Length: 376
Image 1 (cartoon, one colour):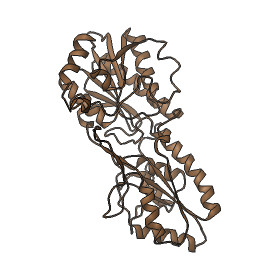
Image 2 (cartoon, one colour):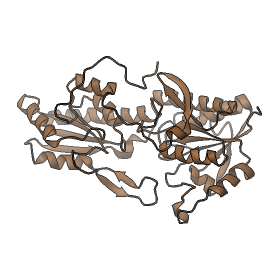
Image 3 (spheres, helix red, strand yellow):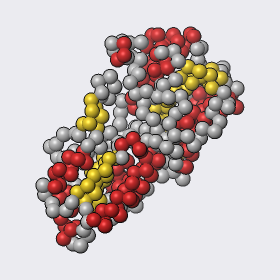
Image 4 (cartoon, helix red, strand yellow):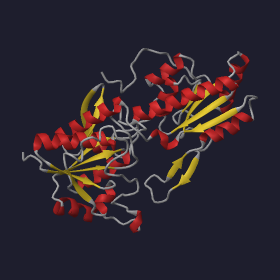
């Protein structure tokens, strides 16, 4: 097999702490081990469409391990198969010619979530060899126990929750913290457990507002004169609707969720006597320096992706399963989401210490299983 000599790399979708760590690991590994040239696409797939790419030197990827964001830029609106800025045109033939004939790339490493992997899978079918790296703070990609960026987002949410705890206790309030996560509740679940939430509301379990109100009243009556609620942006009441903050028509996922904490506040104020306050973290969870865990995971993913390129393992995405690096078919990951299952170990952990998910009668026995993604 001929060793690949010209490799592209791009970061697609939303930004996430650890992106630069992956870029660094992929580029340095390929430069050192294979003597390859690495070409960075500017702003994700938009760079392929607009023909914006630049060579990356060893110096370009040095000193970026701790940086948040991505030195290449990213976009969540640049689908070459339906590019909204040009009337939803299919520009994939032009992209293939640019990548294969003009840039003469042997492969492209794509770093992103389910939407990015969907595009990568389709471009792979058109003849561009692809290797994927799983990225999202939401931790919702299929067939990988953990995505980089998630640990940092949870740490930020937990710190915010710690600060709300003291003011809730001082003023005897119900405090609601809203986290990101789209249609998966991983951030709210892990931050809620770490922050000692009394109630965790996530998309996977539609909550009963009467149950939530009952818990608040019972805590007040029992002398615990405050309640902490961690709610994922995609959570909704039984029979209710998602809280949609904005509709972005030129995005592959046009719904921008947000504001469920305000809905919940309004619902609770009609049912309890306690004062209710809310806080929405929003994009704070995406920004800043990645945690040590995410730097390590991102570096491991990047080095593994570079090895996959060198071995010609195309059409596959790096993944971590049960503490070991492996790879899975990009086709199996594309346009799919890994949500919190009712029997998830962390759900059982939360319930073992008395945390409610707002569902009457919901019970689970804690069996000591380690939550997925706890790498050894």
